[in-house]
Image (cartoon, rainbow, N blue to C red; front, side, top):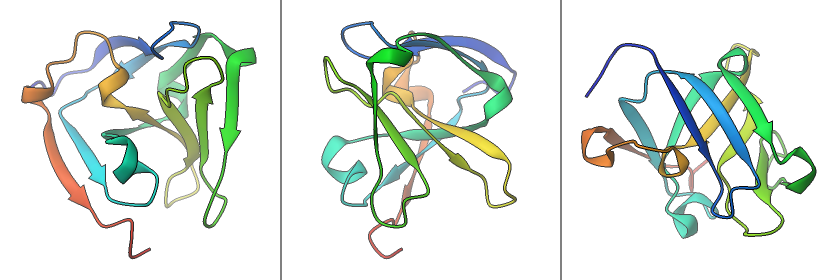
Length: 120
């Protein structure tokens, strides 16, 4: 498990949506809400400034549910949700990246914590 910043790339299955991320992926959450639980998403959160969409803006479809505060963005071709946009509790813009969509990340090295999204 690394704690130093690293440049990651990632994206969807068909590779239309691609992004770069600067940060540390040592932890992630496994949310049990009605969406994440069905998809098996593992989320890591980053300031928006550390994320750069390289391609696929025109392929992204936005889906919102519940309180309509998170923009769950998925590829309209392959259906994969590689990231979402929202705000941190302090109001700062953030990106929640699906760690499973990052290239060359060893999931065995990521500490996963459960999050009870069903109750929120």
